[in-house]
Length: 49
Image (cartoon, rainbow, N blue to C red):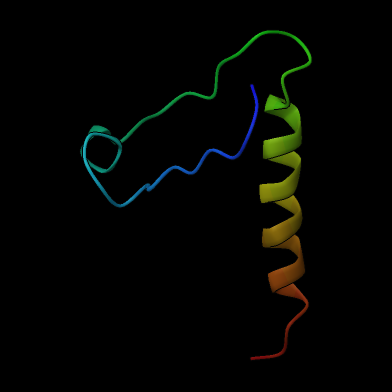
């Protein structure tokens, strides 16, 4: 896969589904996506409100 892919989670059909899956062959970066999301949430907890 070359280039950049963007997904808008606020538009149909993803926003209407309630559930989505990250799929792909081994080594395609599925775990990296989940690691990045986890890191983003963990980093937000360190910011004083």
